[in-house]
Length: 474
Ligand SMILES: Cc1ncc(COP(=O)(O)O)c(C=O)c1O
Image 1: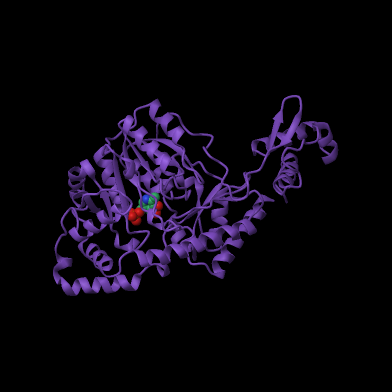
Image 2: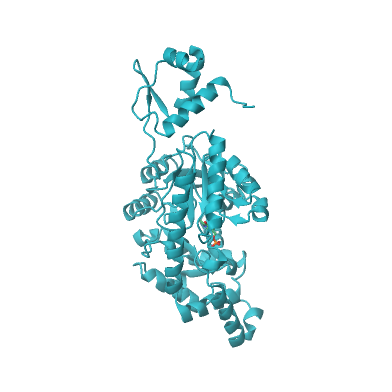
């Protein structure tokens, strides 16, 4: 038996007609009295029906003219920009323990659409295995001594050279090798901030960043990131003008989960605003090499003339998440980062660094990256098509130019956590949008990864999620 009240039933029915285009944008809805007669309900129920549709963003009331149907977002556009509840004052991260990837996901998800990592089949596992063996043969003591705190010299040089290709001048001496980008970001935060300081993050943003901030007792201001246009620079400027902010942690190149890319003009303006307000920029740049076009977008550091940016990156998304090798470009903070590294992990594990350096010397990065980007672009396109085909009307999906994340906006009446749970019960992993913000916003968004190679099984999983969403929407 339906648990919907009478007005909800009528509102759901009308909402579906609007989303399917049976009732068109701009059209005037029947008067309240007429609606009551048409649907066999009282005028007061009709009032509730229109109020519900208004809350869902489907209708707008025009004074003395009645109710009109609002334009729906174009298919594919991820409409919602700023969450309505963007806080103006800094807040501590509420219940950081809830921002973890649910433990049951890895156990239950046979189809791992939740993990923003290329599947092992897309990574050069065999070549890295050979590299590890070569390193062990060449240098049998590598595993029984510490690496230098700053990391293996050859690797530092290769990282600096790679940035030179996009016009960023990096001194190998400022490259601090870390256990993934996450350690680099945590060290940077430790060096730059003190407990109670305010940091600026995007919404949505990677939940690991929110965890790192919570662990250090920092307070957060948010700035919206739009799946299509990237970081809302005007809002960032306003937030910085309003109160003192110590650091900004941003993911301008293919944000996880939004998949968004902030353009060069936006990046330049962000660096200028942060510099003007004395805000240190901690840039999380680990997806940039996964640009489908093959043209790696520049990091914020490219626009930094005053040494305001600490750029962090890693090999996790392009080569091997399990080897745990990343870096920070420390600039004037290099010595402080090394000091913090000393009491964090002393030094990054020796063998993975040497293995990656060996792999790069033998194969370079580009041949593998070309294959990986092609596969990811193909997966992303097919996943989008499947979602637009099989999911209920009103679903919008981002169109990322790189990275690993598809940000899907469900029709307003659907709760992403319920869909996540229903999917997981059928072995399909996804992540609900409320993991990606300070206070559990983005409840109608789901993040899917396109790191799993395309197959009938992926198509089936997306179709199943679509069916579940359609059933829930009814
Ligand atoms: C935006 C972002 N930053 C950092 C990380 C962690 O990266 P790493 O494995 O290099 O520590 C992730 C992993 O998903 C991520 O999406």
